[in-house]
Image (cartoon, rainbow, N blue to C red; front, side, top):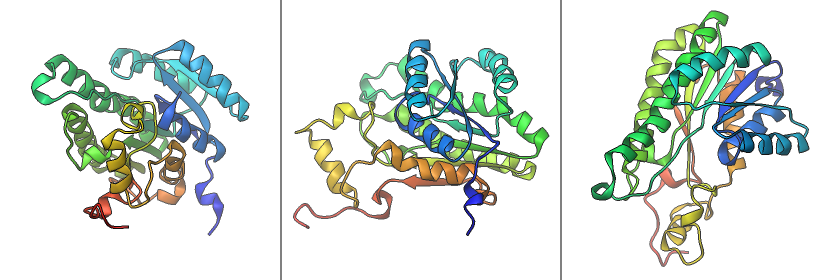
Length: 263
């Protein structure tokens, strides 16, 4: 099989929240496959730091300050990105937040904020780029879903609601835009070692031990574990793959787990 199937030369990819963690790893993976990289964030300082980090890897990163929940700003900024870098062929909706609060203690405003960033943000971004993709007759949209698109867990009700909704939004985008040669798929990371999960990965935290036991691979994932799946979904190799969520989870969804005394 030719590696040209995965070649992203001449493509432009926008990765939201791509200055750190999973988004950064995906951006690097797409760049190494040949894509030009655009990253947005809400902090100019963080974008500057990320730009320097990308440059050390020989990658030119184009950074733009942009809040994915601000529809007016998104509509105004996307044309600037496309004029200065190139038409957006690949959109990775990665920007997201989580608030770990029991339902009875969670403020409605906090619940709405999580949904706004994690679900409405991808809706706004996809709408802003899909028109150009339709005109050009091709496009790839990758929505960062989650284990919480399928499973519940205490204290993450807003996040799970948003990620469950994002799974269904992915399917509906695929349904509406497939005839325009646009593929819309999701990536569902397992438990990944990022700044978001750092509070629950500390030594002695029972949840840390639980995840290692619960994951057949026997470890937390690394952000880099997601890059290959992103390249696949962004490339011609996935031209007839549409409306799916690919779970990169070390096997969690494949099993009900194992007894504590099992090797």
